[in-house]
Figure 1: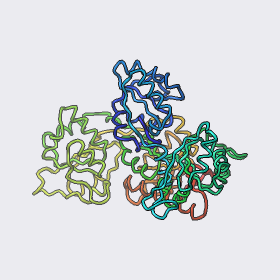
Figure 2 (figure 1 turned 90 degrees about the horizontal axis):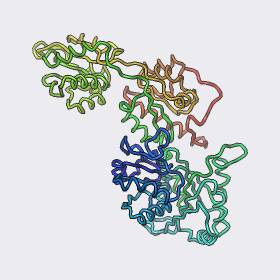
Figure 3 (figure 1 turned 135 degrees about the vertical axis):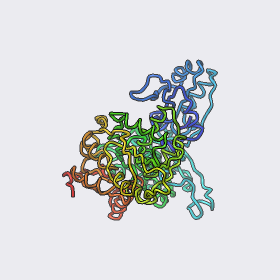
Figure 4 (figure 1 turned 180 degrees about the vertical axis):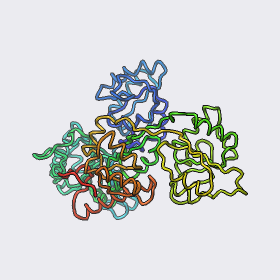
Length: 546
């Protein structure tokens, strides 16, 4: 199975389907992390890699790979062998397929996006020229040639590449440490030193970096960027695989670079929410090029005394309430769990009006089978809900009571507002919020040491709890807060707030952070400076709160 160049979004539908039914996964190290989430949780492993559910393959002869797979295959298990890029362009994969055929093991091939196609596309380097491009007819009919020069290359091959027509785009796979020698060999065999060249490391991932230069200047460019060894730099692993594109089409990168120019490209963003709560937010952050990391700062536990919730659920069934208002997804979950405990389902809400504080809570109700009658038309908060809540009318409302299941630490805003509108409120503790356990030591060190580029605070409690379980974020970390109250708490903890959401929603907060990242990037470019992530710059002193 071809897993593509590294971006999980480039997995084909057939690849995802194959992974979803796998009993055993063997994956190249470069793409193991991108394919593993699509495998069953209980997937069988061989020699499991620490803390993973898949065996990660290093260099191993094809015959030995097949010998290890045979017992699993012959016992009827579904084995997926995932390779980087496309298996048809992978020499080792071809050897393994031949070994399967010789051993009479049935197999199928799932193609993947080749590195030679995917990486230049993500680097903004077209492989065919459009109308008006040098050496190309309208529609782009010039040749494209892909060559792997990462190992031993015969002198005749260098001669052929050096003498190739200038209109032919050469896509070369090599390793970082061999780039200077590759450039020298091409010049020695006929290519002009001023021929444009792009080098892309970690292509299609959020750690992608593309460097453009010429054959004559690429070695100096990589040293200047501290990618290759120099007297003052720590190099990237010289064995890292890279994709090089040679030819005039490299010049289009300035116009067509779409991936590395995302507003938060490569930023490690700390999201102090659980995976259940952070799903949509993390997807939004990824669309801006960021790498989100969820760190729960609170844990949800049942109330200490369950009798209050038990009476409330019975009241729902017996017609005690006109309304029930949900102010969080956790409240929906708590009521749903009580319903299931009593053998009830969404039909128990018949005749009761249902309110949700916002779109996320409303979706949790819809997933339960309940369509809310009231969702704020404006601000998605308790205040916004009160803006749209109807006053109690004894003529039209046969019952004057509202059930409000919520957290033990919730504010009194909604209760007070409903009472003002003439309603009686049963304010019930549906769940307790407690401080979560500290994250793993490497995460704590990254938080305090500047390993994160930004942190999103979605409430005052996330500020207090994160500082309590993991320490204060480093001064280089961009602090983004969902509203003034959260910002005030952050400042009270010695943090400078860089981004304040224009609206109290996580979507608006993420958008504001992306706008901040774009401004930062544009300012660097306007000043003729390289674009750095916040964590790549370490000012000497800790910043102070405003």
